[in-house]
Image 1: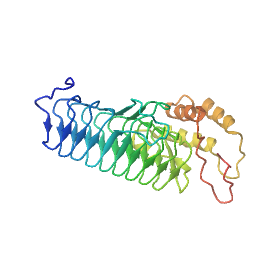
Image 2 (image 1 turned 90 degrees about the vertical axis):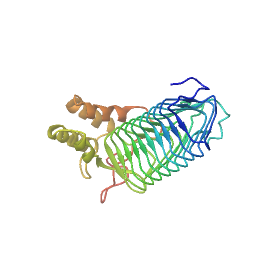
Image 3 (image 1 turned 30 degrees about the horizontal axis):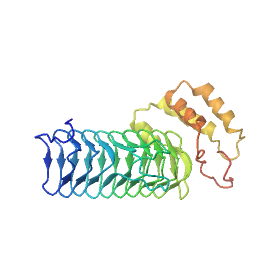
Image 4 (image 1 turned 45 degrees about the horizontal axis):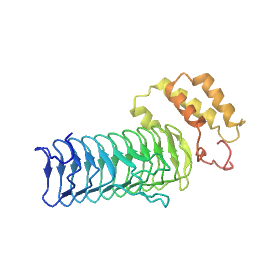
Length: 285
């Protein structure tokens, strides 16, 4: 990484781009036409800003990030409490950000940091709000919008036009269906669907693709059925069900992760299970 005010010979900066001389620019960086890079920006080796990209604030793009046209990164948050504090924004290595995405920096009242992990794909027209934290290999499909302080763990997938309420947590490997309003936390490996998100099971396809074997898959099925009994079954309080699953299956790391997530403090609570015929909205949750 070069020091501020210097441009490595390997950097390709288009004549129409405006790059503040105080910005830190790495090796083999490509900055296309009509891009704007602010004074406190750090751009890692091999980053590509295709065209008409605006990067401002105390923002860091790690090595190999690729940003498509009409993206803005690190601008002030849409939060009335924000008073110009020097908060941060960070994009992890080899993440791809497609057209018209907006990513805002953090707030002093939150993490003071908006962070997207490595090897993520943020598709066109999506919005990552202030203080959101995304893990590695997260996929955000077109038109997804997030409120502030959303947390999305590694390998989660958010399908097109989903809307995530502020402070919602999405667990590792979970999948959120398209056009889905998510108002409550989604457990690790969970699958939610519906106009207002309801838990319909685990992300079995994703688990299989990640190498989960048949025995562990069966254990996860049994654990899920204990945690979320079918309509008509005898239903104990959730804490009792969690304790039962932990005693029988807590030695399995993925199940233990689910249970830890369910017991962790939450601003929003857990997404309820999908209502079956004749079942009330609160049963089984």
